[in-house]
Image (cartoon, rainbow, N blue to C red; front, side):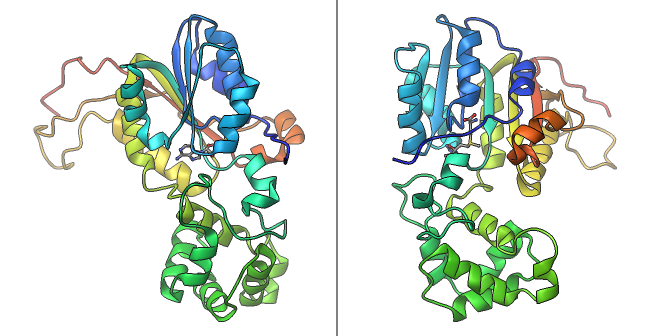
Length: 318
Ligand SMILES: C[S@@+](CC[C@H](N)C(=O)[O-])C[C@H]1O[C@@H](n2cnc3c(N)ncnc32)[C@H](O)[C@@H]1O
């Protein structure tokens, strides 16, 4: 079996910002290789509880072995967007801290069988949850050029989205990642192929986001996470690309605001209350030392918010 390996990103920073203490109840919504979870478990100790969620069976199996015998560890196969349901089933009403380390793990990217990477020649797959039906093969071979172009533009922000979609459709059937790479490369003018990142990077990101429905549930997941926190509980989110970062920033800002009335109204009638305080006015990024050790931390941005006491009185005048 392909060895599970993933270096936790911004580990020290995440642990410091979550302000963990012995006995706390924590959710790691993106367990992966358990890199962050190992440190969380060490701090919360035997009297604490860590609910480790992942939708990838390989990640869960790996962590079950890694934390075998640790009674504080509760592994759960689920989508983090269902964390409220997960807590309800476990009889957990509120938690002290929640971590979401978004995106794919190095294991998923590097394991040829998972079909995520344009660097390895493999069957197109890209599912985080291998029990899910929709695969990258279905997207690449069955969608119309218009639909593909929309996905590549919205989730990959590739300016050649329309051409790439047309070339993909013309090259069907496409069974492998290298066949997909050839279609993408043929679509991108030579001058642009030579500059910047790998020509397939944006299209792969887009297909992966679509296959795993990574963006749409994010806003509600953040709201649910905050509703699960105790007052002063903290939510930490690591994002890896601008679309994730935007969703995290916008939702945290919305939760921080105490009024969403139109600017021109004199009296506040919206009933919105401030639910969190953002603790990272600017996102925390990896140090030079971490980047040297783990280049995949390059695009990581950590944002953290703390739940406020929502029972505090709401101002009625602007
Ligand atoms: C970047 S890795 C996390 C790595 C982990 N923090 C560590 O230190 O080992 C992201 C993990 O989250 C999982 N994941 C991504 N989206 C998910 C979702 N919506 N629900 C549950 N798990 C998800 C992926 O399967 C992957 O294992």
